Structure formats: C-alpha cells, structure tokens
Length: 252
Image (tube, rainbow, N blue to C red; front, side):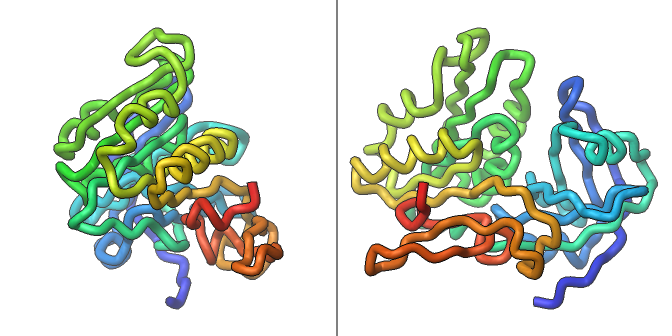
C-alpha cells in the first residue's frame, strides 16, 4: 500500500474524561479501507513527529479515534476544533483478523479499550468483551460496546465500578466459551493474557503498544523481539509487521 498523507476534517469532537478525547475524522476514501486493529499517524500542529493512534471505529465516512493526553503533542491535538483539517497517514499496520464463524474474546486495558470497539462491532454477537480500567472515573465507551451486540464485562482495579480486579479473572471464567482471544493494552496485561490463553489451548493475538516515529517501518524505532520456529529470536516492527502479533511469537 502507498502511504500518502491526507487531510481529514474533524467532523465531531467529544470529551469522554478530563484527559480522553473522541474525534471523528471525515475522509471517505480512508474510512472505506480501514480495518479493525489498524492505526492512524496524526500530524500535530507545530510538531514534526506524528502521533500513532489506534482506530476506535469506522462510522460511514468517519474514522473514529479515541486518545488520551499524555504529553504536549496530544494536548495540542485535543485543542483542535470541529471543522479543522487534521493530516493523517492511514490506515497503517496489520490489524486483527476476525473470523465470522468463531467466538472471540476481546480484551482492552485502559487506552487499549478503544480499538476493541471496532473489533467487537465486526464480530457482533460472537464477541465477548472484557474491558479493564483503573477506576470508575476512567471508564469509557460502555454504551458503544453495548450497541455492538457483544457480551460486555467491565472491571476496575479498585472495585469502584464493575468487577473488582484485573481482566484476567473474568477471562479465566469465560475463556472456554471462546475459540480465540484478541487483546490490546499494557505489556504486563498482555503477557498474562497470553499465558492464560496458552494454558487453555486458545489462539491469542495481541496489539502491542510501542513508541514509534515514522509509522511505516523506515526508522526501525519500534522493534520488538519475535521468536522464530527454531527457538531463536529476530526483530519485527510494530508499525509495519504489527501492531497485531500472535502472542506465542512475542518475546515477553
């Protein structure tokens, strides 16, 4: 695929929490070819390096991204106004393959929750979604997930909302109902999910969160260790070869 930067119109903007924003970027051409698990590389006004942000959903001609303010760049991005042009390179990366005939558990942790929405929508009533948050104030997208026809389970670390604890506890309870597991979130969470899936002989695919600069495999800054079939290790790039990988291949 040729990666051309294109302008999108910020068609709608919502603030979900004090630090999390929901943008709808209108570009019919890009929306038509964007798949679950892919990401966009956003040019922030006044900044040289783009910011990678996972695709949360596609709604008609709009690509939906949900991001958290984590530094100056995302703070500037959050201040864009409806009607502004936002330049992106998209769709990037290898996303999730979602078979229509399989029951799939989708797991999101923190800001890894948004990309699971598009996945759940693609799977419909074949989806079981487990989303984990720090506390009640961080919970996002509950109604959106309910609208996908999925079975939704929510957890918080401190028990202020949903199930008290981490996503791994409900995963242990429902994993035998599913054929495969797909997850996005912090590396420790993904590592534990991968162990559980392997112990139950379930396919598991994870979307890795790595810092990246170019977004297309040129700068080599987002390399991750991957196991070869012979047991040795090589490196692949999250932006180009991922962000989705078979969990058993990842050198945790």
